[in-house]
Picture 1 (tube, rainbow over the protein chains, first blue to last red):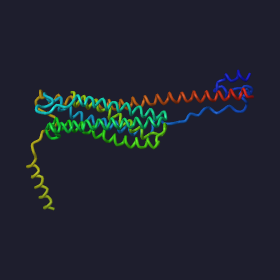
Picture 2: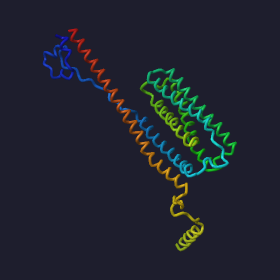
Picture 3: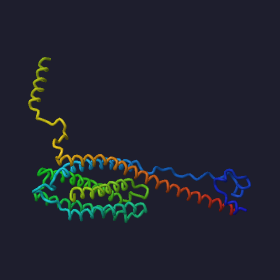
Length: 221
Length: 95
């Protein structure tokens, strides 16, 4: 009898007869299950989305300026100007893309509560980001030796502005990443409480995703 | 008062004399076959499409996150109801 009664749906329990209620152990029906109400994302997460939208528009403005001169010039790069190192930078692009993978894996590792793996993957992300910046810096020094400076031509001015601003963003992201790494080492991020890690991860992936667009536009187009 | 008037007039006259010749329209480049016009057109089209791309990406991201959260909540509901049913069955069997 009791076994058959359990086939009742919870919704039916409120309107069930006293006999049926008794089969459930008597007393009033249990309260309906309460689901914890939580927003789909934190305020910081939403703020970061807005910030990244503004950043995207900022870089779009720079790319628009580049397009004016690039499409408007019959010969590009202009005569007597050094060619950009597309192959080395292509390899560098792969390094930066790999850092986005390690960053994402780090974020997922935190969700699973794997602290050691989180710290390790954050370290790899920082190392790959630093390698990217070092290679970029090395190539810039070479280009300066070849005579490509900010004031040498519109070509140089556009190159250093566009790529320089991206480099500055990577540098800023790297500094933030090191701070996040330090906090992760101290165990300050748990599965649910990781807003700093989440926003840093978003920023890093934005900076990485922007680079192939800039590389294609400035180095290959 | 007249001194102020004279000084403003002289400054205005000096500025007018010093002013360089400028185009009435900053983007009127003259010749229609000028390749710079192609550059401006490409840039205008790119910048026109960018806000749609950015806002579209944000909206798509928010919809994706909302759907994922709703699915997770439904799973949590199902889990809680299952747990409650199990408790009720155990009570019924115990009694």
